[in-house]
Length: 283
Image (cartoon, rainbow, N blue to C red):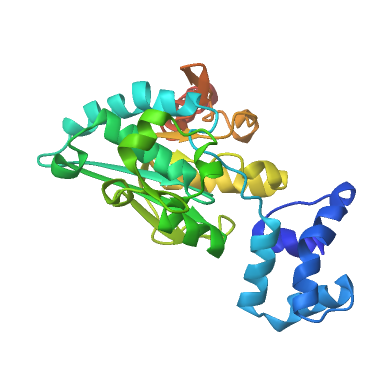
Protein backbone atom coordinates (compact mmCIF):
# COMPACT_ATOMS: atom_id res chain seq x y z
CA UNK A 1 0.00 0.00 0.00
CA UNK A 2 2.84 2.42 0.83
CA UNK A 3 4.29 2.00 -2.70
CA UNK A 4 0.92 2.71 -4.29
CA UNK A 5 0.54 5.84 -2.17
CA UNK A 6 4.00 6.93 -3.27
CA UNK A 7 3.03 6.44 -6.91
CA UNK A 8 -0.17 8.46 -6.47
CA UNK A 9 1.18 11.50 -4.66
CA UNK A 10 4.89 11.03 -3.95
CA UNK A 11 4.45 10.73 -0.18
CA UNK A 12 6.69 8.09 1.35
CA UNK A 13 5.37 6.35 4.46
CA UNK A 14 7.97 4.04 5.95
CA UNK A 15 7.24 0.83 7.83
CA UNK A 16 7.42 2.59 11.19
CA UNK A 17 4.46 4.80 10.24
CA UNK A 18 2.18 2.10 8.90
CA UNK A 19 -0.34 3.11 11.56
CA UNK A 20 -0.94 6.31 9.58
CA UNK A 21 -2.20 4.29 6.62
CA UNK A 22 -4.53 2.31 8.86
CA UNK A 23 -5.77 5.40 10.69
CA UNK A 24 -6.43 7.51 7.59
CA UNK A 25 -7.66 4.85 5.17
CA UNK A 26 -9.93 2.78 7.42
CA UNK A 27 -12.95 5.08 6.78
CA UNK A 28 -12.38 4.76 3.01
CA UNK A 29 -12.07 0.98 3.26
CA UNK A 30 -15.39 0.89 5.11
CA UNK A 31 -17.01 3.18 2.53
CA UNK A 32 -15.96 0.90 -0.34
CA UNK A 33 -16.84 -2.30 1.55
CA UNK A 34 -13.26 -3.52 1.67
CA UNK A 35 -12.80 -6.17 4.38
CA UNK A 36 -9.01 -5.73 4.45
CA UNK A 37 -6.30 -3.34 3.30
CA UNK A 38 -5.24 -5.98 0.78
CA UNK A 39 -8.68 -5.73 -0.80
CA UNK A 40 -8.48 -1.94 -0.66
CA UNK A 41 -5.09 -2.07 -2.38
CA UNK A 42 -6.29 -4.25 -5.25
CA UNK A 43 -9.42 -2.19 -5.77
CA UNK A 44 -7.37 1.00 -5.80
CA UNK A 45 -4.66 -0.44 -8.06
CA UNK A 46 -6.86 -2.03 -10.71
CA UNK A 47 -10.18 -0.16 -10.92
CA UNK A 48 -8.60 3.17 -11.96
CA UNK A 49 -11.45 5.02 -10.25
CA UNK A 50 -10.32 8.68 -10.13
CA UNK A 51 -12.77 9.58 -7.34
CA UNK A 52 -11.52 6.65 -5.29
CA UNK A 53 -7.89 7.65 -5.86
CA UNK A 54 -8.66 11.26 -4.93
CA UNK A 55 -10.21 10.23 -1.63
CA UNK A 56 -7.06 8.30 -0.77
CA UNK A 57 -4.87 11.25 -1.75
CA UNK A 58 -6.98 13.64 0.35
CA UNK A 59 -6.73 11.28 3.32
CA UNK A 60 -2.97 10.75 3.08
CA UNK A 61 -1.64 14.20 2.21
CA UNK A 62 -0.90 16.38 5.20
CA UNK A 63 -2.84 19.65 5.20
CA UNK A 64 -0.85 21.18 8.05
CA UNK A 65 -0.48 24.88 7.36
CA UNK A 66 -0.95 28.31 8.86
CA UNK A 67 -0.82 31.95 7.86
CA UNK A 68 2.69 33.46 7.51
CA UNK A 69 4.25 30.12 8.39
CA UNK A 70 7.78 30.60 9.78
CA UNK A 71 7.39 34.40 9.25
CA UNK A 72 10.92 34.99 7.92
CA UNK A 73 10.34 33.92 4.29
CA UNK A 74 7.57 36.50 4.04
CA UNK A 75 9.86 39.19 5.42
CA UNK A 76 12.48 38.26 2.81
CA UNK A 77 9.75 38.40 0.16
CA UNK A 78 8.66 41.87 1.27
CA UNK A 79 12.01 43.51 1.94
CA UNK A 80 14.34 41.77 -0.52
CA UNK A 81 12.73 39.73 -3.28
CA UNK A 82 9.79 41.85 -4.39
CA UNK A 83 11.68 45.18 -4.34
CA UNK A 84 14.44 43.69 -6.51
CA UNK A 85 11.93 42.15 -8.91
CA UNK A 86 9.96 45.38 -9.17
CA UNK A 87 13.11 47.35 -9.91
CA UNK A 88 14.22 44.83 -12.56
CA UNK A 89 10.82 44.47 -14.23
CA UNK A 90 10.06 48.18 -14.37
CA UNK A 91 13.20 48.65 -16.45
CA UNK A 92 12.18 45.95 -18.93
CA UNK A 93 8.61 46.81 -19.91
CA UNK A 94 6.32 49.66 -20.86
CA UNK A 95 2.91 49.64 -19.24
CA UNK A 96 1.89 47.49 -16.30
CA UNK A 97 4.72 45.66 -14.56
CA UNK A 98 4.14 41.89 -14.66
CA UNK A 99 5.01 39.61 -11.74
CA UNK A 100 4.06 35.93 -11.44
CA UNK A 101 4.27 33.86 -8.25
CA UNK A 102 3.56 30.16 -7.72
CA UNK A 103 2.49 28.68 -4.40
CA UNK A 104 3.03 24.96 -5.01
CA UNK A 105 1.36 22.57 -2.55
CA UNK A 106 -0.75 25.46 -1.26
CA UNK A 107 -2.94 23.23 0.94
CA UNK A 108 -6.00 25.14 2.18
CA UNK A 109 -4.74 28.51 0.98
CA UNK A 110 -3.00 30.13 3.92
CA UNK A 111 0.29 30.44 2.03
CA UNK A 112 -0.97 32.15 -1.15
CA UNK A 113 -3.19 34.49 0.86
CA UNK A 114 -0.21 35.41 3.04
CA UNK A 115 1.81 36.13 -0.12
CA UNK A 116 -1.04 38.25 -1.49
CA UNK A 117 -1.17 40.29 1.71
CA UNK A 118 2.56 40.98 1.52
CA UNK A 119 2.11 42.17 -2.07
CA UNK A 120 -0.80 44.45 -1.17
CA UNK A 121 1.14 45.97 1.71
CA UNK A 122 4.13 46.66 -0.53
CA UNK A 123 2.14 47.74 -3.61
CA UNK A 124 -1.06 49.54 -2.48
CA UNK A 125 -2.14 50.22 -6.09
CA UNK A 126 -1.52 46.63 -7.24
CA UNK A 127 -4.98 46.29 -8.80
CA UNK A 128 -4.83 49.53 -10.78
CA UNK A 129 -1.30 49.77 -12.10
CA UNK A 130 0.22 46.30 -11.88
CA UNK A 131 -0.15 42.91 -13.54
CA UNK A 132 0.38 40.57 -10.59
CA UNK A 133 -0.96 37.02 -10.38
CA UNK A 134 -0.42 34.20 -7.89
CA UNK A 135 -1.00 30.61 -9.01
CA UNK A 136 -1.86 28.34 -6.07
CA UNK A 137 -1.89 24.59 -6.65
CA UNK A 138 -2.37 21.42 -4.65
CA UNK A 139 -2.96 17.74 -5.35
CA UNK A 140 -6.01 17.62 -3.05
CA UNK A 141 -9.42 18.53 -4.46
CA UNK A 142 -10.77 19.26 -0.98
CA UNK A 143 -7.86 21.54 -0.12
CA UNK A 144 -8.27 23.52 -3.35
CA UNK A 145 -12.02 23.89 -2.77
CA UNK A 146 -11.51 25.33 0.70
CA UNK A 147 -8.66 27.55 -0.44
CA UNK A 148 -10.72 28.92 -3.28
CA UNK A 149 -13.61 29.74 -0.95
CA UNK A 150 -11.27 31.69 1.29
CA UNK A 151 -13.29 30.94 4.41
CA UNK A 152 -11.57 30.15 7.71
CA UNK A 153 -12.64 29.31 11.23
CA UNK A 154 -11.56 31.25 14.30
CA UNK A 155 -9.08 28.47 15.05
CA UNK A 156 -7.52 28.65 11.58
CA UNK A 157 -7.33 32.45 11.72
CA UNK A 158 -5.70 32.22 15.14
CA UNK A 159 -2.80 30.29 13.66
CA UNK A 160 -0.41 32.95 12.42
CA UNK A 161 -2.76 35.69 11.28
CA UNK A 162 -1.64 39.19 12.20
CA UNK A 163 -4.44 41.30 13.76
CA UNK A 164 -3.81 44.26 11.45
CA UNK A 165 -3.98 41.99 8.39
CA UNK A 166 -7.17 40.34 9.61
CA UNK A 167 -8.91 43.68 9.97
CA UNK A 168 -7.74 44.90 6.59
CA UNK A 169 -8.17 41.83 4.36
CA UNK A 170 -10.96 39.72 5.92
CA UNK A 171 -14.68 40.04 6.59
CA UNK A 172 -16.33 38.57 9.70
CA UNK A 173 -18.87 35.83 9.03
CA UNK A 174 -21.16 33.82 11.34
CA UNK A 175 -18.73 30.90 11.25
CA UNK A 176 -15.39 32.71 11.12
CA UNK A 177 -13.74 34.94 8.52
CA UNK A 178 -13.78 35.31 4.73
CA UNK A 179 -11.08 36.76 2.47
CA UNK A 180 -12.04 40.05 0.85
CA UNK A 181 -12.63 39.94 -2.90
CA UNK A 182 -9.79 42.33 -3.70
CA UNK A 183 -7.28 39.94 -2.10
CA UNK A 184 -8.90 36.83 -3.57
CA UNK A 185 -8.74 38.31 -7.08
CA UNK A 186 -4.94 38.10 -7.07
CA UNK A 187 -4.97 34.32 -6.84
CA UNK A 188 -5.90 31.55 -9.29
CA UNK A 189 -6.40 28.11 -7.73
CA UNK A 190 -6.05 24.82 -9.60
CA UNK A 191 -5.33 21.17 -8.95
CA UNK A 192 -1.82 20.01 -9.86
CA UNK A 193 0.22 16.91 -9.07
CA UNK A 194 3.88 17.88 -8.62
CA UNK A 195 4.95 14.44 -9.83
CA UNK A 196 3.55 15.10 -13.29
CA UNK A 197 4.79 17.48 -16.04
CA UNK A 198 4.06 21.16 -15.50
CA UNK A 199 1.89 21.64 -18.57
CA UNK A 200 0.84 25.26 -19.13
CA UNK A 201 2.61 26.41 -15.97
CA UNK A 202 5.04 29.32 -15.71
CA UNK A 203 7.28 31.10 -16.07
CA UNK A 204 7.37 32.43 -12.51
CA UNK A 205 9.39 35.13 -10.81
CA UNK A 206 8.93 33.56 -7.36
CA UNK A 207 8.10 29.99 -6.39
CA UNK A 208 7.16 28.81 -2.91
CA UNK A 209 7.54 25.02 -2.69
CA UNK A 210 7.74 24.55 1.04
CA UNK A 211 7.42 21.54 3.32
CA UNK A 212 6.27 19.06 0.66
CA UNK A 213 9.42 17.57 -0.92
CA UNK A 214 10.54 16.33 2.51
CA UNK A 215 7.98 13.54 2.06
CA UNK A 216 9.46 12.46 -1.30
CA UNK A 217 12.19 9.93 -2.07
CA UNK A 218 15.57 11.54 -2.92
CA UNK A 219 15.39 10.92 -6.68
CA UNK A 220 11.81 12.21 -6.88
CA UNK A 221 12.79 15.29 -4.87
CA UNK A 222 15.75 16.06 -7.14
CA UNK A 223 13.64 15.65 -10.25
CA UNK A 224 10.98 17.98 -8.82
CA UNK A 225 13.36 20.86 -8.14
CA UNK A 226 15.14 20.47 -11.46
CA UNK A 227 11.77 20.73 -13.21
CA UNK A 228 10.93 23.73 -11.06
CA UNK A 229 13.98 25.56 -12.39
CA UNK A 230 12.56 25.08 -15.91
CA UNK A 231 9.51 27.22 -15.03
CA UNK A 232 11.49 29.81 -13.06
CA UNK A 233 12.65 33.04 -14.73
CA UNK A 234 16.42 33.60 -15.16
CA UNK A 235 16.51 35.81 -12.05
CA UNK A 236 13.64 34.04 -10.25
CA UNK A 237 13.57 33.17 -6.56
CA UNK A 238 12.77 29.82 -4.92
CA UNK A 239 11.69 29.33 -1.31
CA UNK A 240 11.60 25.92 0.39
CA UNK A 241 10.80 24.84 3.94
CA UNK A 242 12.88 25.99 6.88
CA UNK A 243 14.18 22.45 7.46
CA UNK A 244 15.00 21.80 3.79
CA UNK A 245 18.29 22.24 1.93
CA UNK A 246 18.90 21.94 -1.82
CA UNK A 247 22.70 21.94 -1.81
CA UNK A 248 22.81 18.27 -2.80
CA UNK A 249 20.81 18.83 -6.00
CA UNK A 250 23.47 20.84 -7.82
CA UNK A 251 25.94 23.74 -7.55
CA UNK A 252 23.40 26.22 -8.92
CA UNK A 253 21.34 25.68 -5.76
CA UNK A 254 23.57 27.94 -3.74
CA UNK A 255 21.81 29.09 -0.55
CA UNK A 256 21.28 32.83 -0.27
CA UNK A 257 20.38 34.61 2.93
CA UNK A 258 18.19 37.56 3.89
CA UNK A 259 16.06 38.31 6.96
CA UNK A 260 17.60 35.22 8.59
CA UNK A 261 16.04 32.90 6.02
CA UNK A 262 17.31 30.96 3.00
CA UNK A 263 16.22 31.22 -0.63
CA UNK A 264 17.66 30.16 -3.99
CA UNK A 265 18.20 31.61 -7.46
CA UNK A 266 19.23 28.45 -9.35
CA UNK A 267 18.92 29.87 -12.87
CA UNK A 268 20.96 32.93 -12.00
CA UNK A 269 23.83 30.73 -10.86
CA UNK A 270 23.41 28.05 -13.53
CA UNK A 271 25.20 30.13 -16.18
CA UNK A 272 28.00 30.94 -13.76
CA UNK A 273 28.42 27.26 -13.00
CA UNK A 274 28.49 26.35 -16.70
CA UNK A 275 31.08 29.03 -17.39
CA UNK A 276 33.34 27.85 -14.58
CA UNK A 277 33.03 24.25 -15.77
CA UNK A 278 33.93 25.25 -19.35
CA UNK A 279 36.97 27.26 -18.21
CA UNK A 280 38.17 24.40 -16.01
CA UNK A 281 37.84 21.92 -18.86
CA UNK A 282 39.74 24.22 -21.23
CA UNK A 283 42.66 24.54 -18.86
